[in-house]
Length: 216
Image: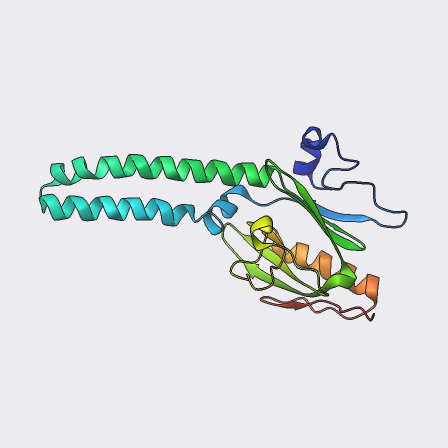
């Protein structure tokens, strides 16, 4: 169990184990636990840099259009846009921090579990036999996102999952360990565990990571 999760045990006092609604069955071992990097989540899911850049560009455009080369006039027009932009960035950053702090991702020797949600929390269990493929994408701040294609008829709402879903995969939402540090190492933990559990080769590589498909 990672140190940051251990330090926050009090946040999950009502759970049998942090991030899990009940203790794993006998023989099931917790291999890794973690949560999103708040800054990377803010950039990738909440588009915080795009929002800040939008208000900056809008203020400069309005100032230059109104005052041309008059620097003081441009600055006077720009300041309100910067203030609104700073407020928007602050709100998005806070939302990302709260979302990241309320999240616990878990990989065990049998499944992937996702405890997600800020105000209303949901725990999603993905047994390895229900995962058809896994995809690893590298992101910002040395993080990455590990997304899972699920098998069977069960469909999960993209809006319920967001931001813990593969971006733009809305036709069939793919649960994702979003903006996690050391994503390559986490992907290998999942790959090795799935291969060991189902005894089917799993090849981990950048971009896509075929996961085992269990026989019915």
